[in-house]
Image 1 (cartoon, rainbow, N blue to C red):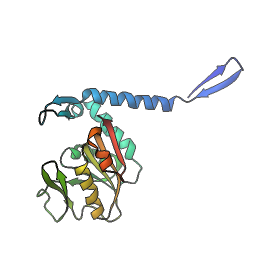
Image 2: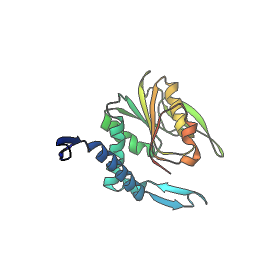
Image 3: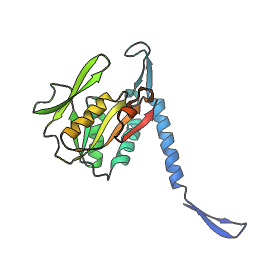
Image 4: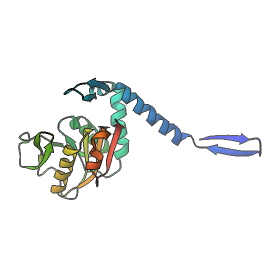
Length: 200
């Protein structure tokens, strides 16, 4: 806060710049992450631009910005568990869970979890896939944050939300580092709260 004298009417005026500075810093941080992300043409197939997050995560300041943003958003929200999608969701999920005082639960591809699992099948462009979590991963009524690196069509994310609901827990929000807006994932997840740090 800055206090100064307005000479036109001899009154002291207080202006709170803290909020504006905080919002400006957030914009600057996002711009830094955008610059760190590498765009690779024609991967994994011709015509696709792949947003490579590894170049942002290997930068220690970039990694700190990403994790801190998620942490600030979800701390003190009463989240019991963070569910991370196989595999890049693990990168963010465990760090966020640790920072906000929650447990971490991996959602994995079929056949990767050793105990009894709950499974949901979802559609791909050329077939189907499924994702699993342990049936004893969390209790009924638990508040769950779902985390992945990328929101594209939303198929994997919706399957994870359905998994959480099959175990009678509550989906608090779905969080992503990157959202590919043209692919309609947010619309596909209508009814759920969705947060993404960057949109393309």
